[in-house]
Image 1: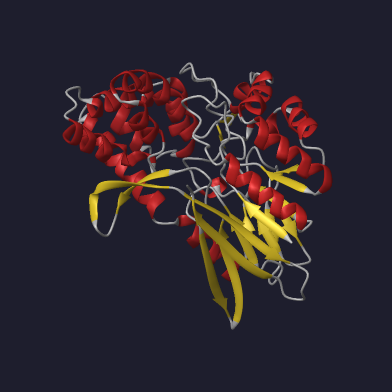
Image 2: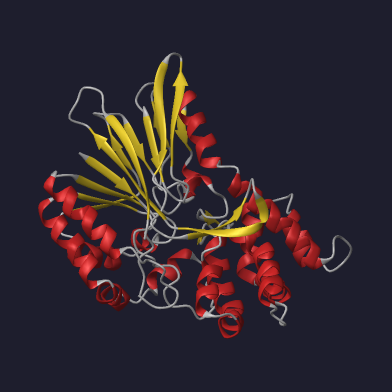
Amino acid sequence: MKVFLSDLHIGLGNEADDFIYDEQMIKLLDELEEERSELFIVGDFLELTNLVNDGQLMDTANEYADSFDLSLIDEIFRSHKKLLERFQNFSKKNKMYYIVGNHDYYILLNSKLKEKIKEYFHNCEILPYYYDPKIKLFAIHGNQFDIVNRLSKDEEGNLLPPFSDYMNKYMNFYFGKVASEILPSELFSDYQNIYPQLDVFKWLENIKEKYGIKYNLKNNWIENFTKLIKTPQVKKWLKSNFPGVNVLSNIFVNNIGGLKLGEGIVRVGMFFRSVRNSNSLLMKSEKLLNEEFYIPERYLLGYTDHDLSFAEGEIKTIIMGHNHRASFNIISNNGSKKYYVNTGTWKFMVNRNYGIDNNEFIKKKLISYLLVNDSKIEPTYKLVREEAV
């Protein structure tokens, strides 16, 4: 039995750590150990990019990775001691595969960090992606297909962090300091779990009206986001990822003409939100399964230094995480069945209530994982989705 799950985002146990499903995960690991299962964590197992946050933006991804304080791994283990000891014991008897995502990509750039994690999890492989030729299954986190969340290079060949990395560090520090003083702890936690993140505009409008908040948090968010866009690091990211037709730079940086700055931010924010809502990972998987399976090296920067390609028929199943949207999709291809599965998340989410009242937000506490029975000639799949207590 193979078991796939992703996006736990286990952190330091502080106000920024929203992993609350320790007992549910321990129970699952107990069940899996009885089955002698292989465990695959498809990215963002540990929350590393947002642990210690002083709002500082560094020029390269390697700078962030090299400066990571290894003692924070020990702190994570102390904060979730019972759970991570259970993972530790599981890895002594069963094989674990840790596929790296965008909230833990430092692991691939810092060899000492990689070895530190392997000291804790004994029988554990740390991988950029996973391929099983026997059952023709390919697993990757999925941020590689999301321009906001993948790594890139500047003109000098330096590896740049994802835009989301810059945004989270900067906004969580500068806006977060203000919001944490104004909002009660539960609402501040909800703010950190709005998904997609750019729905924060509407959420801030809602809570201002619903709770009679006098301070205009939305304006503060926009002001800080404006300052973020004007930083040298983000300007470089924009230039590298939107060369020539650098519309975003023109909106945010050019002081002459164009849209008003605040209006431009909202427009760009809504664009990013609509891209994230379109379930682009499903569409990308359909293309990979129905056409030539080819992922160019530029999508995989920081994860591997070569293109990925497979011949027709070598991939029948694609598994991803990243967008926190658990789904099981059968994709027909010339009469044969192929599959795209998203393992979802173990992190609660605050989403707009589309279809009923899209101005309202609801908190979803769902956990999910994929079971693959590979003991048969044809593997069978079962996506388990449970409501977390």
